[in-house]
Image (tube, rainbow, N blue to C red):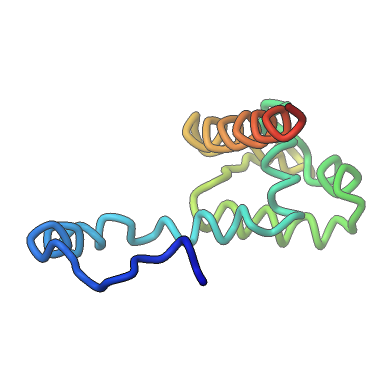
Length: 121
């Protein structure tokens, strides 16, 4: 028998309707989490939390890819608003778009580390 399910079906119609009206608030957030759910892009964003900015060539070496692959991922991150870039001569440097991106990754890291700590107790 399933213990984590209601045994009868009932719901608070007023409460449910109030929440349904707010579901549009999260529009666009799925793109952000989709971007960060890719291991390569998450590694790139994490690297950018550790360093203010990185050259595309450095990113390629950090993630163990070609410059073209790194560039593709960085462009995707830029297009959805997680990263920004600047060009200096023939080099292109990327950084996080803003402090919010840094906070997202930092909070996720703290959460995972706390979970590991609690699992060990």
